[in-house]
Length: 205
Image (cartoon, rainbow, N blue to C red; front, top):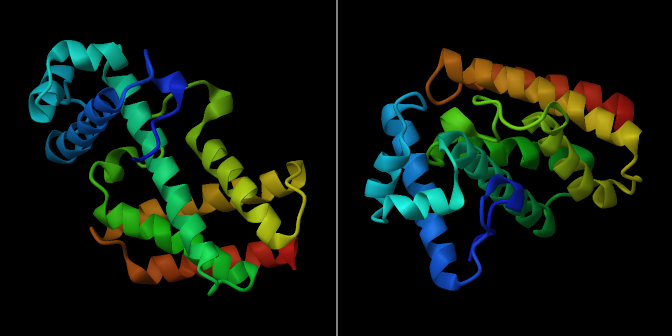
């Protein structure tokens, strides 16, 4: 079973398997509808109809569509962290440059294939939550925790700042690549990759 979104994005966390499966269907429907109609025309009623659940089931978990989008963003981040962890555990990643490539490559795969990701990703397109919990801060913190052991570095504030700058940079350039081309302009992506390598080399070598 996939991880349940962080409890702060839910009115009530699912306890039973049936309830968790219903929540998964609701978030899957939300993701599909984001691709089809966009955030402005998204409604909790349409999500309930697509998921095949009573509207009350949606409101059991979410007070409004913003909370639902936030939960989808958190699920995206959880799944992204899983993908990066699997890549790092595979044994093919031997230095921080290969780790950085894995981090960027897995993001690009989700950007191209995950339903609803183009609009929500980790919350960047629909800002949610308090300022201290801005999406790129959440991503940078998660990557710091994932990669610090691999880099043999203490996950201190200096390392968190380095990853935050890298994440903010990558976020801006990847969104530029996808504005230029629906599948992401490869030349811009390679420029982003080189820029990140140069910046991280100063901090990590």
